[in-house]
Image 1 (cartoon, helix red, strand yellow):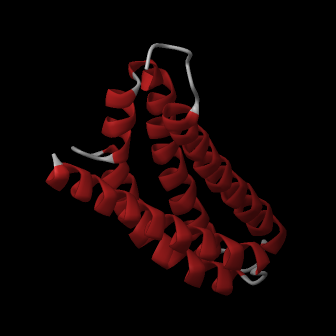
Image 2 (cartoon, rainbow, N blue to C red):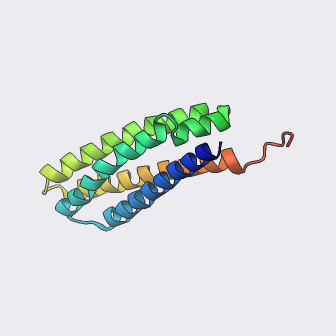
Length: 142
């Protein structure tokens, strides 16, 4: 049991570290103006996000833990998994746009802003789910 707790803690620390990196990239991306600058910031996100999402969704991942702790989380977790796919699609579309279209800076800015907001909203929903799972008292025995 102690080993499982240490492993879970290590996994959570890894996810927390990834969240810090993601938010750092989002902060930099938010202030980026040039398509080439945007593309340079998207490249590391394109490497980080798929692995991060796999860690959350995979066996013994955060989502499995949240599901086991509170089975009622199922639909919220499925929504978060769907958002993972949407975020990766939006990321790839934005990478393509910033790579090939230096002329349409306004459109890239709009898509970049929408992408940053989508990721932040997603991470906030995850945080709320985590808090609801572990910190909300449902009034049961114990």
